[in-house]
Image: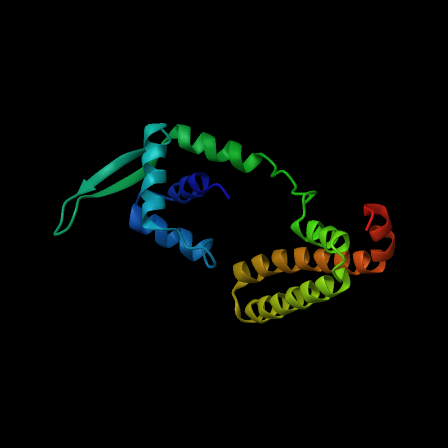
Length: 174
């Protein structure tokens, strides 16, 4: 995820302080990975330098000065271009799981046990995500569905690989 583009998109609804941006980001996108304040301010500094945001106001109070940021026309154009650009699908052609299976075969370990252990971990996570999905709002349900679909694909791969372990062992020279 592009944090810069996400913060720019949040600014399209109106100027905000860094604290408000962090809160909005965490509320909408950061359930599992909230932003650190330093990350927000470093990103805003970069966006300011690149002309994608401007300081709309500076407020003085009991603490340090608070800058309120607003998106510029260049920032709006940048967000629009980012939203219109499709994400590159991640084909996982360098899978750690595949590497572990091959190395287990090459070293005489039981690759079937490795696959069983991994299957159990996937199922554990799927149960947790399903419970979270039941209790979540629509946004949380959709993000859980995304993760669940990927885990289901992994499970299909685990089953296929388990069925082909003998042939794979011969192919890799185990």
